Amino acid sequence: MAVSSPFSVRKFLFIFIIAWLALMTDHAVLLSFYDLPLQSAILDSIINNGLLLLTCLLVMHSIRFYVPDMNQYLNVVVMCIVFMILWLLLAQWLLGISISYYNINPGFLRKSLVIRGSIGFLVLGIVATTAIIWYNWQEQKNNELRKSDADRLAREAELFKLRQQLQPHFLFNSLNSINALIGSRPQEARKMVQQLSDFLRGTIKKEETQWVNLQEEMQYLQLYLDIEKVRFGNRLATIIDNGEDALPAKIPALLLQPLVENAIKFGLYDTIGETIIRIQTRIEQRQLIVSVSNPYDPETSSPQQGTGFGLSSVRRRLYLLFARNDLLATHTKDNIFTTEVKIPQQTTTHA
Amino acid sequence: MTKIIIIDDEVLARSLVKEYIEKHPQLEVVAECGDGFEGVKAIQQHQPDLIFLDIQMPKINGFEMLELLEHPPGIIFTTAFDEYAIRAFEAHAIDYLLKPFNQERFDRAIARWTEHKQSATAEKQTRELLETASQSPIQSQRVVVKNGSKIKIIPAHDILYLEAADDYVKIHTPEGYFLKNKTMGHFEQVLDTHHFVRCHRSYIINIQQITRIDPYEKDSQVALLRSGIRVPVSRSGYAKLKTVLGL
Image (cartoon, rainbow over the protein chains, first blue to last red):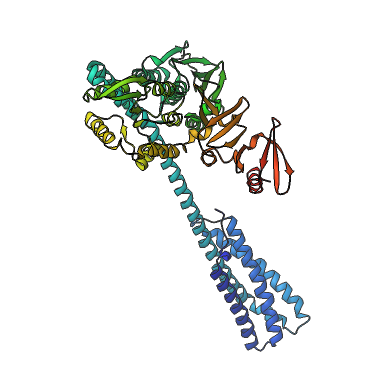
């Protein structure tokens, strides 16, 4: 939100104009009271207060772009004094010129200098203080807005994370499989309960900001794959190929599971018969590269469909971690859809 | 005897339904299918009274499979949590079993089906359900049709235009046309309105296929497609096309 000037508030503008008219009238009346001809008194008031008005606007404008802290009031006082002196010199000079046209006693100008100066300083001070209060308030309001925006984003991210973690579809289907196994093969049911618990515990335990080594992430992935294999039986096969030196490499926790989940969904729901999911890892130029591939049917699905599943959240996470958008790539070849993710390694992994 | 077919892509999920069915001697499982293609075939072959149908399945989902049946049998959906689908069921009083479910809940679904199977509204309810369900995102991206004994999935971007033909809609693609037993209004609602415009009472056009729009007779235009085909455009259709194309 842009900072608005106090004049954008109609009431403030109104009061400001009234105050100024009052000041000018007062000035003129006072001078004529001290036996100055009315015409000269009015001219004096217009020059003196007109210039003061311009100076005030200048002060407000400077404060708009440089809002002083609450404890920097000395700066404000200095600024007001500088502006006041400039104003006073300019007003005296202009009034001096107009003397030749109107009968004003030059001695009167010199004598009134102190009074003019102090009234001017007072007015400038009031205007500056008002402006500071206004702009500080505006800034505070903006800060609050920004803060609530940031809070909202954080909450949304949190919710999204929770949704990602819970994966209701996977959870309920797994429970249904366990339910079926209890009747026919209780030993296997027990085993699957264990696997599902370990998997869920892994999800809850890890923070998204945490880094783990690839070996740990692969063990966690294996739990997930084992559960999916019980669900889908012979239809799901996996080939895991870990490259030399890849296992100690570092990776953000829980990064790979959505990629594999995506591959399984895309593969199993787009083809009939056995689906082979291939996971390959390797180190290349100080980057850990993980590729996950699945078969698809080019007749019924477009590669864009594949990217739409769950990859955008992984891409977003990589962006938040590395500020790069080129770490996740997908390509298709011979009816195989491959997702490749690169994870830069901070230190050399050849320790 | 009541003939039953179980359609679910997970073996264990099917075996659970079979286990629960054993308690009901009047029910007989005549077939088990792992996807919608097998499902359509088995339903035609066995003419079951009741099917247990999963929604998320390979190739075509449960709703798309039902669309391919001329006379759908009784249906009990078995599904894991799917908010969208649940709303559709509740609105149309067709029963669904949320996985995981137990024997009692299963028995209740059977009792409820037995009660309602005589009523003539069952088939109408199924049609209404499909109409609601077809507004899911996946169905705006493709159309599933039956071509003889084969099932064909047409991605939406392959559709050139649609043409009304009595009770059917002709879906024109580069490979020729396919018929689907639906109304023009249905497709107008289901397909992505950014890409498909009803340019005429009897035509819906894929705007990415248009190369030119020429005036034709008084008050009407004709759209020329990339393949050289001409599609009539009515006056109100022309106005709609202009908004979508940003003219």
